[in-house]
Length: 156
Image 1 (cartoon, rainbow, N blue to C red):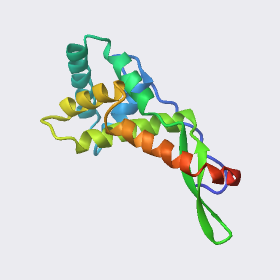
Image 2 (cartoon, one colour; image 1 turned 180 degrees about the horizontal axis):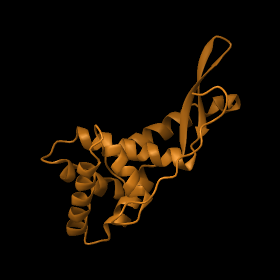
Image 3 (tube, rainbow, N blue to C red; image 1 turned 60 degrees about the vertical axis):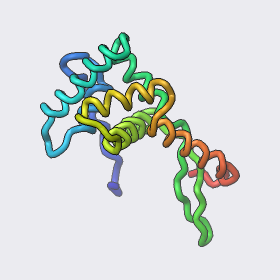
């Protein structure tokens, strides 16, 4: 974290096929060791499978899945007087989206299945129906924030 000034936000350009910033964010999170073309292939295969299985627009399913997995509250550790409190805070929209994408991809990677596109398709379907590990993670985060709302006075 820089001491002098906060770094400028980088503008994410939309992906070439669907013209969506969300798809580009997903591609950048999936990418390993700079292999962006492979990440694009995984995402577009997943979107084709979503269109086949749900008979809906795949971009709408993905947006609904990310919206369902996005947390509204999170807890941060704050040290006050020698003891550490878990202070609940509201989540900024860009951070909430980043957390949702991260949780969807980690639960997808932990899922058993053949290919990454298949696992990602199933995870998007589950998250769009308000089930799945990413949504469960969001619910745990909200429960933790609700349990520690007595420490909300220590917000910073």
